[in-house]
Image 1 (tube, rainbow, N blue to C red):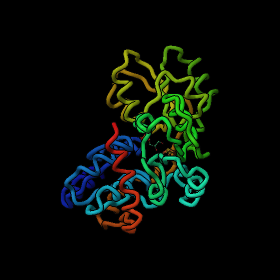
Image 2: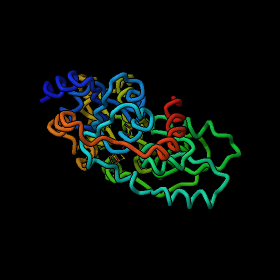
Image 3: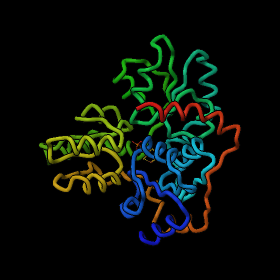
Length: 298
Ligand code: 13P
Ligand code: SF4
């Protein structure tokens, strides 16, 4: 099936991109695998006419916002992000009405309608840099992830007006699961995603985006790592560091939406050119500046 997908992608001049949480066999069949920021940049830069996105809805939507002339297909149309669904454009408009002077920073895990109400988007890879570059006297609304917001507050010393969103998958990773794993493997370093609970973040040796976690593991002298994020990341970690060991603190750290994409579905989506992600032009244009700002920050 991997060969079938590759062949079809060649025939159709399509680029297959996959998030780091996708099933191993889907990652291995993709042209590119990466974190949210890398996927947005790769989708924007490609000369391919079709982008087959193996990930969740907001990721394909972001690719369409940046490149409306390309046909962006979401391999599995039902794959959403529960965190992105925790805030609506109406919720954000109400926050803005309460804080009319505030600049709005939205995590890329949001709908296009929310992005259309946003000044600058960010991913976990550049959230702190985005906030650090906002003038010190400016109020900042940060939505929707409360845990990423706390990480940014700690890293930048800025106070944020927060929304109460979270990722259910990352909140399965608790202090108890980390301490239990650490007791079994005291030599292991803990690498956590900033979507983790603040008390889990406090136990981590490093806090990184998914691709940042891979780079950290590669550069570290350590041989054993506790990986506090969705378990799909372990595939690339192991593949790119065969001499190192990666342990998940809990078997519950699985994003059901990310796992909906199978090779069979990806092939069918590309064959039929179904599940195209498009927005009305007004919403797309309103969201564009915020997403362009996001991809310009390292
Ligand atoms: P990254 O941008 O770090 O890959 O994270 C995306 C995501 O959805 C994490 O849950
Ligand atoms: Fe959304 Fe969490 Fe899944 Fe990432 S892991 S796509 S934040 S539900």
